[in-house]
Amino acid sequence: MRLATWNVNSIRTRVGRVVDWLERADVDVLAMQEIKCRPDQFPLMEFELAGYEVAAHGLGQWNGVAIASRVGLDEVETTFPGMPGFAKGHDGPDAPLEARAIGATVDGVRLWSLYVPNGRALADPHYAYKLAWLEALEQSTRRWLADDPSLPLALAGDFNIAPLPEDVGDPSFVEGLTTHVSPAERTAFARVEAAGVTDLVRPLVPDGYTFWDYKAGRFQKDEGMRIDFVLGSSVLADAVVGAELHREERRGDAPSDHIPVLVELADDGDDLDRPMVF
Image 1 (spheres, rainbow, N blue to C red):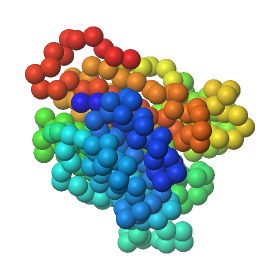
Image 2 (image 1 turned 45 degrees about the vertical axis):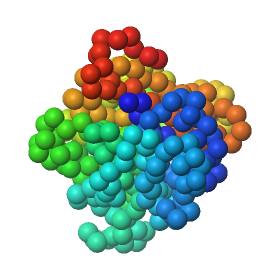
Image 3 (image 1 turned 60 degrees about the horizontal axis):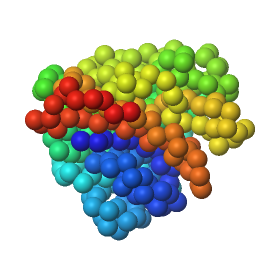
Image 4 (image 1 turned 135 degrees about the horizontal axis):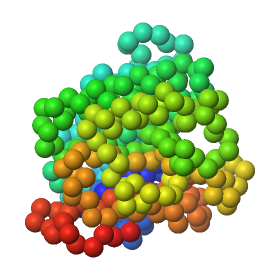
């Protein structure tokens, strides 16, 4: 199975690019973030004509997540246990939930498309929300894998964290001054991994960014960040036969500021020793 994640930065604006890439890259399942629309506004027809069914969760022009699959799509959920909400000026545990998570079972894999909160600034309430959101994800991941250690679990999406120093080429992000690179965020990311998942892409593609800001010619200068990941349980890690960062999708007409991240998993009965694809 070829499984990918992509922060599309408005699916209605980029549906042509996304569907064209799905077909060219022969993708079976795509986790999308920042779809920026409600489910009734999602351009389903283009995906269905290409052979994909879609589950989408969005509340308006911000955030929003979706999964497109041509290998089945079942058991859809739009929250995970303990997921906190957020609203400006709203304190307490009953803040409204944002559209930042959608889970589904695709060809036996339990996949979550995740759009981790940005954090905005270290002193902003959104930063505390981000850390709480990641803590809830960590705890849920631990429970899922404690209940079923052999669960094929994938957490895919825009994590808005550069876990390693080499994941940062954008000079506007400075540890101790900005989000995405703070010690607390990196620790939170590491704790999610420690709950039982690992980066399925980095072992095969150790270098490369997944995001370049539109401003200041960041892409042309290759001043990017690696903030988009596919994290998988041990069952999936053992099945990985290839991984790719599709950098060329940042070029051309009206690209997203993120690129697709793709991992290829051996199907049942496939030879796990076949050559890797990059």
